[in-house]
Amino acid sequence: MSETVRLPQPDLARVDIGTVLHALADPVRLRIVRMLTEAGEAACGALDLPVKPSTVTHHMRTLRESGLVEMELRGNSRISKVRREELDRRFPGLLAAILGARPAVADEPVDPEGAGQ
Image (cartoon, rainbow, N blue to C red; front, side, top):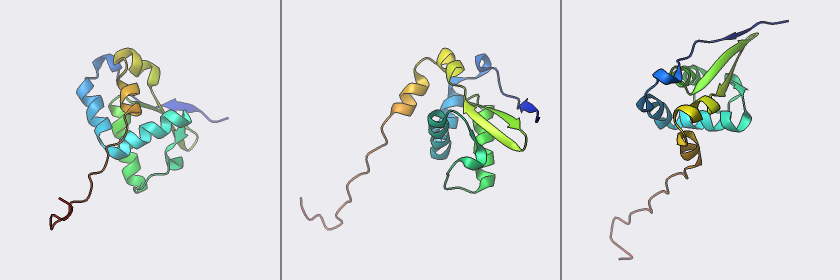
């Protein structure tokens, strides 16, 4: 039987909203939070991300230290999940609004010669 160890995380009462927003401002970290919200929990290596494993580790640490994600060691795996209930109590509606926001619409290509005006 393997032991489960929870990694240190901040008390959300001491986390400023700016810290949370800064963590979520990075597109990869936002994608991680969306993936974890959908999956419930996942091992870091199971997340399909367009970055190197060392970069995933950095992003996961940032998310944990900002209070967004809790992480525990189960055997050789680091299992992460969003601290949804705690975040909803601390910042009501914030996570729902961010996760529910539609992506920005790309601008239409600019015609350098002004055709079509």
